[in-house]
Image (cartoon, rainbow, N blue to C red):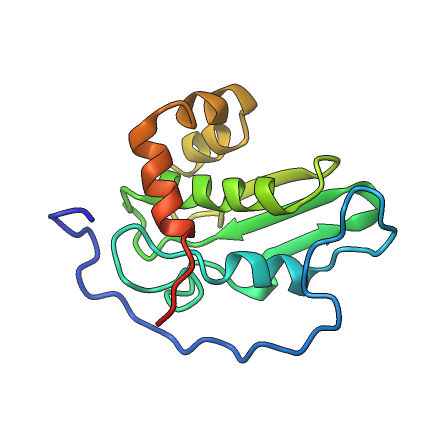
Length: 158
C-alpha cells in the first residue's frame, strides 16, 4: 500500500452480478471454443486496485464494454480508465491487466492494454510502455513490481 493516496476517496460502484457460464475457464491452445468479451472481463474484474481495497470493477477502472475480443484474429484489447487523470498507479494497473491475461490466455493471443483516450496526463507514454514486450519483461524482472502485481492478482475472499 502507498502512504499518500492520489485519490483518497474514490467512488465505489456495485459489482455486476456474475452470469452463469457453462465453460468459465479460458480455452487451451488446442480447443476450438472461441473466447469472448465476457470471459475476458470475468478474468480481470476482480484484480485489486494497488491503492485501495476495491477491485478494478468496483472503481470502474475496467468495464465489460472496455474489452474487445477478435477471437478469429487472436486479439484482445482492454481499455482501462484510471480514477484520476494523474494516477501514479496507472502503469501498475496496466501491468496487472497484462500479466493476468498472459497467465490465462493461450500464447497465440496478442494483448493490447490501453488507457482510455484523454483519461491520463501521460497516456501515450504509458500505452507505449504497457505494449512493449521488452519493457514489460524488464518490469517483471523487478521483484518489488512482481510482488505488487501478485498482490493485486491474489484472490479476494471478501
